[in-house]
Length: 310
Image (cartoon, rainbow, N blue to C red; front, side, top):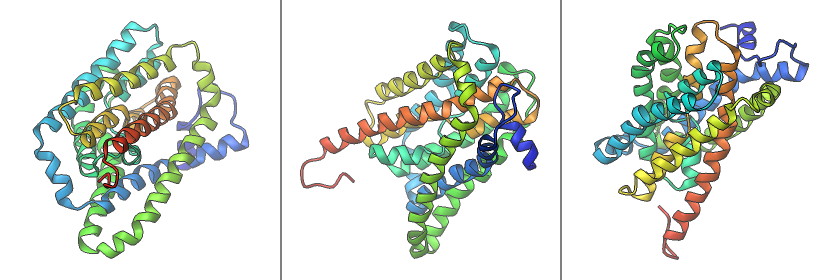
């Protein structure tokens, strides 16, 4: 996609021309999104070896909860919300796409804040990426008949920006651990900086569109969905250790907005669908950071004095 096409894709609802600062923010969105997605996954890959990721895949309780929440509860809740609230169809499609795309690239960042397990985080991301590639194209005809998206359109950004950085980071840690240790801090800094930059850019470009969404029930739909899945998944995972329970809750509470955006690249859509997905970035990031901080305090309080949290 060339620069002009990218700028048109990240336009707000109204047809007014973007001012110079908004044009800069819109042009910065694609590279920030790339660094944001690849950097967060690369950072966790540099911290893990292959066994740390493979081991959680044998945890049946964890896997069952991940699959049920990712592919049954979250899509069902999104569908229930758009049917119960008087929300415009274009906003509804945005929330339904979000419901099909679990696990934001910033999941490792919020899990670290919560004191969660990095291995289960990587496993959650792997399962979510593969599930999104397999299931989103099957669900799209039902929720958005106008979007005819082939599997590769969805798979390409997930493979390039999620799975590849994660696998590359783990490979570097196995083959050249000293190099991985040197790179880890720099990659983590880039990932954290790009997260802040992406949030600023999205708010800059879509601020007026976000204001226009007030009174449309779009914001209320996001809040109900995010709070609902965070609280529900946490309550359902009482049988898991706290370090895994936080991964499950934050994993389903964060959403892969890059994957949710991907189907919109296939054709012309109502710009309110794009705005609905963009609106989820600040809402989800702020809510999950707050919840992760609370989880981290609980984890610290549960560790006897003088012992390490991990």
